[in-house]
Every structure is written in structure tokens, then in C-alpha cells.
Length: 317
Image (cartoon, rainbow, N blue to C red; front, side, top):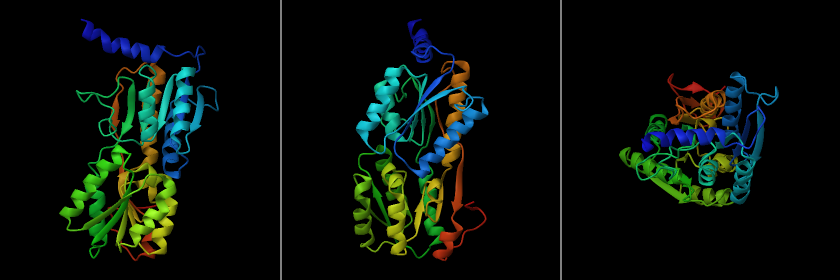
């Protein structure tokens, strides 16, 4: 009987722990860094809330926003503030805010977005179960092979793929393993160089370009997100096209992608958050896989590299 009561007790703690005594729910929203790609998820999240009647502008929800600007101590301080203030919900945008939030609290619900499945982020227990206070939307790496195959489809003469990866990010290491395997199956060589922070990206990418790669592949890596304009400029200067698994990077200069629509990713997470706010508990909520992926290309960049895409790809708008 105790085993049956435990989940209900935890759900009740998650919804009733708040120090906020007003009727207006409070969301603590943490961004990992300032970035156009994850900003799309933030917009989607709040658009979904607004569609369900939760709007800061209309006073139906209060939002405490913090951006860590890529700094871990700043991120930790932000999450500590949310916990001390006992917000109703922590919305965590990208991997590190998700990890930090669930490490700091097991009673305040955490809504994840732009992050890998809990197992890849090292958040599951020995039985493979995610934290009891975690819900939201994650991505697996099952789509990475399709993303790499696009290179072979569009550039059959390409032989060497280059990429950079942050060794500290679990999803980056896992993505690298998938890309390595798929490159081998396609008969292509992969050159991958480690990068520890966005401040190092330019030098590392320049070293990669000196290895005479044919294309650059931008992985689901927060360091790549944070320094993509630097990567895009260096690759453009060497006339090296960028392919990616992240649809949000096509707007920022990648030529093509097959991957999650970042806005819709945030919107899906916002729909879950709205359910939580409406019912006042996590009943029925859990981490779920992203629903919408897209094959998309950037017409201007494609023209620059004389690349052609069939009707299965949507042009960037």
C-alpha cells in the first residue's frame, strides 16, 4: 500500500510546495545562454501558455526570467533563487538548466525543453526512471542518421565531414557516436575536434578547416548553438557548407537540416506546462519526445553553394 501512495504523495508535494500564496502562478524560466535558436523555444513556450490563458501581460501568470549567459555559477544562482522563492514551476531551456534544476529540487516541478532524453542527460535512476518532478519535451538521437544522410544525397562528391563537440555535454558525446557510426556506413571520414567553451570555437574551427573538410556538421551541442555565427563565418570564408540536425540553425546560416522544429519544441513544452498550471499537479505529465521534425533548407545559402533540394525539403521562410 505504501508503494501505491508514494507517487501520489510526491505529486502533491510538487504542486503544493510553493511559497507563493497568491492565486497567480509563478514560473521561473531559465535560459542557458543568449541564443537565437533556443530563443525560438522560449517564444513557443510562452505562446502555448498564452493560448491556454496564461499571460504575464494579462496578469494570469507571473514570470521570473533568468539568463545564465553560458556561465554555470550564474545558472546555479538563478535556480537557487527559484527554489528559495518556491516558484510553482521551473521552465528549463536547454540541457544544463534541466540538469541543474532537478539537482536542486525534487519537489518543484521542472519543465524541460531543447534537451536530450533524461537518460542521455544522466538524469535517470538505476531503473531508468526520470526524476519524479520532471516533465516536458526531449529529443533522442534517432534522427541523427537521417541528418547525416542528407549530405550524401545533396553532395555525393563530399568525403570528409568536420565537426566540433563539447566533451562535457552528454548529448554531444552521444551525438558524436551516432555521427561517427553513420559516417562510417556512408563511407565518409569524420574529423571531430573537442571544444570546451564558445570562446575557443573560432580557433578550433579554423584548425578543423585546415584539415580540408568538405562539409561541417553542426550537432545538438550547446557550445555550437552559442557560437554558431562564428562557425558560420569561418566556414563561409572557406566556402564550406554547414549541414545540421537542428532546424533552428538553418535560419542562422546552415544550408539544410533534418531535426526538431525548435519553436514547436518549446510550444509542446508550453502545452504541458499549461496542463500543470490548470490542474495544479503533475498527474498524467511526464517527459515526452518532441513531435515535430522538419526537413528544411536555406535557399540563399543553397544558391551560394549551388546545391539543390527536392520537394521533401521545405524552404526557409
